[in-house]
Amino acid sequence: MADILYEGKAKIIYPTPDPAIVLAVFKDDATAFNAQKRGTIPGKGTVNATVSAKLFLLLERSGVPTHYIDQPAANQLLFRRLKMIPLEVVVRNIVAGSLVKRTGLASGTVLGEAIVEFYYKNDALGDPLLNDEHILKVLATVDALQLAELRRSAMQVNAILSAFYHECGIRLVDFKLEYGYDGAGQLQLGDELSPDNCRLWTLKEDRILDKDRFRFDMGEVEGAYQEVLARVVAKAGP
Ligand code: TMP
Ligand code: ASP
Image 1 (cartoon, rainbow, N blue to C red):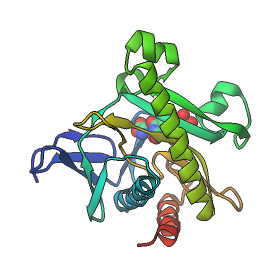
Image 2: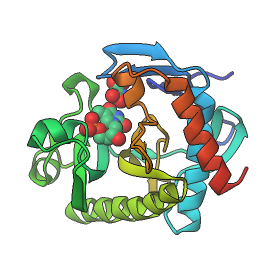
Image 3: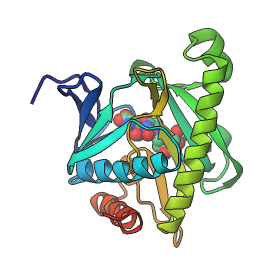
Image 4: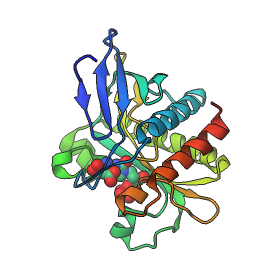
């Protein structure tokens, strides 16, 4: 294959003959805690590419612009090339993970309304939490209108994906999004939408079906990813 444009922890991005389009090859490699923990989840690349493709299509149909174009192979997706905003946009419906540490609230506490958080996408700093002042006045990552648009879009994505996952018998606890601008300057949802960057608990029994199984050595990691794929494909269609 052609030279690599970029290699991340979970994906390799290749150029294509069209400079506006890139090919993402999803890896089975898994990392956690800023890559301090490493491993492999067999089949993860295919699960994450396929689940992402289904969810990007669902969002597009609901009016959310995304970078998704096509799935040319099981673990590969074609994306529009974006200039990425260096923010991780996290939406939370239920208290879990770092929000437990930050607030002392019990994991599983349902939030009255969903919240949006922004983290600085910077591995060297460990992706720290940012407030609006940091984003607007210190880093000048985006302006106030763009920040408002990110919040609005993230809440819209949450409404669409929460309703879809509910139909799959899954609670969408929280998730991370990344956005970028296309060549025409339009904001688009980028990256991936997979069990690597969501928390997914079954409606019955609160069974964990996401990367927390890998992060915290809970076992049955591969089975959980395959279960998400099966449930998503059963609802979204092949
Ligand atoms: P957190 O509770 O650890 O802050 O994670 C919130 C959500 O963001 C959760 O769904 C997992 C996801 N996430 C990522 O996708 N990448 C990351 O590097 C981290 C820390 C979290
Ligand atoms: N993806 C991040 C890493 O590899 C963190 C995580 O998902 O827990 O470090």
